[in-house]
Length: 486
Image 1 (tube, one colour):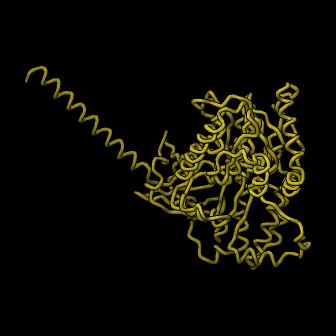
Image 2: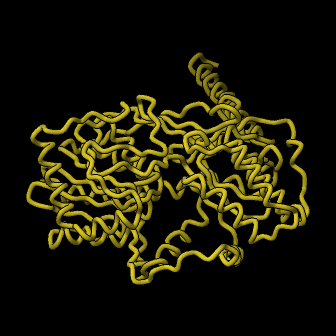
Image 3: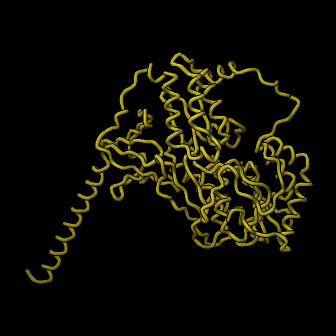
């Protein structure tokens, strides 16, 4: 064999060996997914066997399956890195460590145990004790509240009674990310058990975020609205030099032509049904693609504006990734904007540093960000990520102060609860939970929802004058851009 042929054959043999090793490594990687994995924080257990994953809810006193699906449904979202199983969902990375066996509390429950009122309360209490991050900040004396509530429950407590007792306990937290849901008939029966409240005055009009946002948009834009192809966004010119963009939800940005004629609650039911078979991460990607497509149109329409009013006063939240996609449009360099961590035992998970990516053509002209107490959750993530952008001025009032993702849990009886288990910190380690992010210019809007809505509707022109004055003051250098707490 000549030298040239020998070299060629040697290279082919080397490539074959490398290919076999890579395939072997891939198979070992796939096989290594099998087993029992316990989450770091979040109270979950994953059992992977061949091509299926079973997810368990766990607490110090409970462990039961809540979901089973084919592992292929998670795509590239699930992988092993440094002996840790990682599940990626948008900006979140959930980590699991391997266990040799199931925890002792993972035992099959009969229907009697699943429906036992006292046991369900104890599971709820255990979940809150292990994962709720804000007892002190919300001034909750947990031991006392737990004992007081438990004294009202026995194994004979009916489901409606239990729901009423649990809901009354959770209401004391005054946390917009705490919730409890049961079948409708149980909630209706629980309502009938409560002491009669003051009759609702039907002569008083009650407003929703969307209804007030529409009135505001109609007033500001009049015949200047440029595009109407989004149910949750409106934009146009307030005058020749000032653009206006109103964003009323951090989700709902995927366009479905077949839903064009559907309105109100029916629309939103149909909208979210379209994502039922998707993973959370897949849904998030579609929402991000949707908002980016709309924002391309927005900035094309408003490219001649010398400044922009960005109105999120009526935005109750949605997906953090959508919020970050919005603020990315105003950012010219990738930068760390906040950190998040989750309650884990007596401490927290490893902090997850979140970065705001840079836009190719960032909008660096003045931005006037309008906020209120209705600006909540993912909307606050948007506001939080704006703190390092010097051309953004906040006008309005403090945001609501609920930053954590909602940790959704299912009780043994099937009821669903949600709670705040995460801590968000700005780049100076400030935590705005409970108090919200303050504005540079405070317009002193009422904090109570309906009072705020009424104040806007009753004095639309006055509010517009106040906002215009605030913008003028900023332009004339009369406003300090100092951020409270920084």
